[in-house]
Image 1 (cartoon, helix red, strand yellow):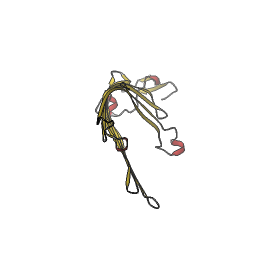
Image 2 (cartoon, one colour):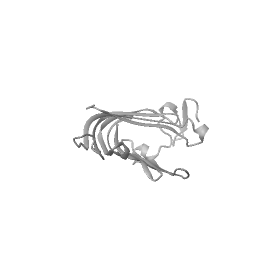
Image 3 (tube, one colour):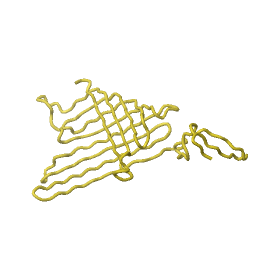
Image 4 (tube, one colour):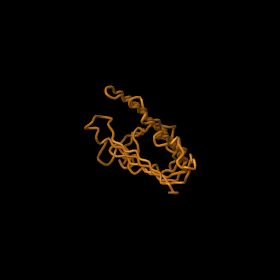
Amino acid sequence: TVTEDSLVVTNEAMDQVKISIEDFNKVNPDPWELGDGYNFFGDVKAALLLEGGNSDNEELDFSYAMTWRSLKDRYSSKGWWEFDEANDLRNKNKWRSVNKYDRFREGDPDNYYGALIAVEGDEFANIEVRTYMGPYIGRTFFDSPILELEGEVGLVYVYEAYEIPIDEEGTDDYDYPGGNWGLRITSDLVSGYLGDGSTLYIDHDGIANFDD
């Protein structure tokens, strides 16, 4: 029997036991929520656009995101690639991959610490490859279908290699220490208007160069 603030159940001895609703953490938990293994979730997206006429345009976009989560830790990897051509001339070619490991504090699933390594390139920004890595701390501020909000701050070491030297001395690489931050926001508030499964999201990352 369920009331507004409690649940009354009958145990094996046929005795009635009253349990406060506030004492419930999970109902019908998955195995990983009991400490058994990992939960995997992710997605892969691809889009191709072809336009013909006075001008010919071709666009290819690809992205992925994968996460393995347990009660103690989390592995995640995400990335994307964008490739565009106009009249057989390439005008966009950039890509990125970010790989992270998070460790959650004992009995505190909202706070965690971790480390990341990321690799990216952008032909038309003259970046042959940019690699950065470092530790960070993070916190989950909200975790509900209406609003998920997660933020991170940390330190990184950044190395950049350029397609074309950036000065008269022929400098074609550069490294520096920096600080990084990340912000993840998702909400299914619009699913009632745009259809089930519709999600609004913000996925923001930044790096501050301590040398400049």
